[in-house]
Length: 271
Ligand SMILES: C[S@@+](CC[C@H](N)C(=O)[O-])C[C@H]1O[C@@H](n2cnc3c(N)ncnc32)[C@H](O)[C@@H]1O
Image (cartoon, rainbow, N blue to C red):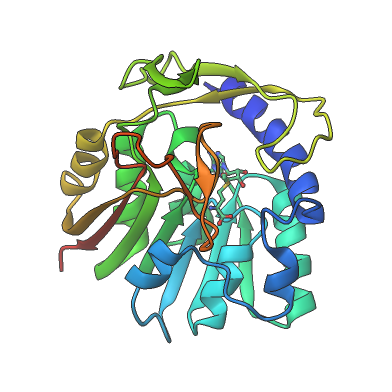
């Protein structure tokens, strides 16, 4: 398993260096530095008032969302396993004079590296697909929350993860549940932002977790689902046929059968 995660970490280190330059503007760093909130409309409309909360952002990448959450008044801790991503996150915090703690570590090591008792765990957009064992993720979320604490999760809908676009059609290509020890192997020569700089560490491994596994990973660990919502939009162009809206979100073209592209979940640790 460590080989998969080592390959992913090397790939993410390279992505972090490309993302912080933001040559295509996909990450909205200029807007962020100018003081704009760059959370997507989905989570911006769902997280509610987070002022004064101790908030843990799992897989915080270069810290943009973490720092937007700090601007909204939360006391934020971001965790990620990419040392380069966290270096950039710390620089962004310094440039914006926002307070944040960034901790280097694997998600599964969060209880040892960070400790628990957070009011909120926040994890969005491109997170659990990098984790081999979703039940273990649920246990980590539960361990990090204080009783009554809340999880906010938003990500690609598992219904579309098995699909790829071929000849203008979405076709089932991968199984709907990836076995822990048998990840989907991909080669990524460049990142998803449109920046064409080529990677040296191209190999990466992903897991598709069905919705039932995500929900049961939480429920079985004492984190009760309070709200689940499906959305016809994603923050990135997952399929070439998708079109970008004025709200920076990508959707299927007009006339295509409607499908849920993302899912958001609010859940609470039993008190
Ligand atoms: C798509 S980014 C998440 C971006 C996030 N939406 C944000 O706030 O910018 C995925 C992140 O997960 C991190 N990651 C992947 N696997 C991980 C693991 N096992 N433990 C910790 N971080 C991991 C990567 O380093 C990367 O920064």
